[in-house]
Length: 363
Ligand SMILES: Cc1cc2nc3c(=O)[nH]c(=O)nc-3n(C[C@H](O)[C@H](O)[C@H](O)COP(=O)(O)OP(=O)(O)OC[C@H]3O[C@@H](n4cnc5c(N)ncnc54)[C@H](O)[C@@H]3O)c2cc1C
Image (cartoon, rainbow, N blue to C red; front, top):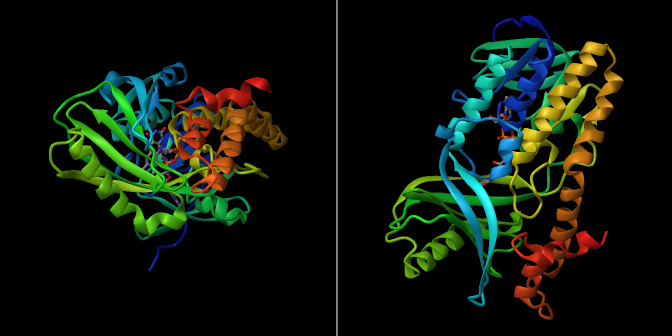
């Protein structure tokens, strides 16, 4: 039995303390408005559902301490099923994602945002959000609501949006005999619409595989076969799993991300890259835009100002996402087609090949 509801008042309530939500909370609170960040988790950042790679240029957008970095990466090596491989510069960091997420939340708190963990948003009402924490149900009043609640966003569902288009992934963390300073990407016609990865973190590695949802039932077998290949190639010595994770990654941005006083951001808005599934960078950038614009709208007392949110995120990374969507459509349409050379298809649709960028340059 839930206890009586208590009404609280905020300018901005943010649902979800992942990279998008915490970045939004920090940007908004820095501007002096009253911000509440809620997350259903008992530990921010845990469990990790991520391969933990970010491009180095993320440092242009946020500061995080070096303790979040497990190792640096110089290049990306893409392996095709005809045994050819291609190397491309890809400077990046392998993060300790749980520390990273916690640091972003700390920055939000130090900017005067309030945070409430173990607090699940359970519904929207005309002037705010309903949340449940233990046996308490609370009605939190808010001028603006930011849905930063991930791929299976409840906020999006409450607005009436359909489930997001996704890729489904499974990942193991394992020990590796030899360290390396590059990430490996593997394509195979069985990994429908997706790929396998081998992302090193010093003495361990994140080994994972993602596919279109219709092939989810094959994921575990595909990953186990992939581990056998890795063993043969001596990239792992034995199959001993340290941790297992996975999840769904959106692969298409939402057409609309502003609904009255409600904004969607990060995976809830489908802001991950449609081809790679990388979503941390855009969650951080989009979160900052959402928080800043929301705070400005509150300060002006004019919620029409929120329209600038969609304009700004589209200007910043909208074209990259649209281009990725066109590549994904082409990839999925031509996957396993008898008259299409698989390797050529991957060269045209994977970011690790210059062919990927060809049409974009001509625009
Ligand atoms: C297997 C896998 C590997 C990936 N690898 C990479 C990678 O290497 N690099 C990369 O850039 N991206 C990667 N991604 C994508 C990346 O993890 C996401 O894009 C990123 O986490 C998006 O951040 P976010 O803040 O939008 O959402 P999330 O990080 O998902 O955070 C959402 C938060 O909302 C909370 N929440 C949800 N519902 C509620 C509710 N009703 N009430 C309260 N709280 C709620 C959740 O607890 C969660 O903390 C990967 C994803 C997966 C699944």
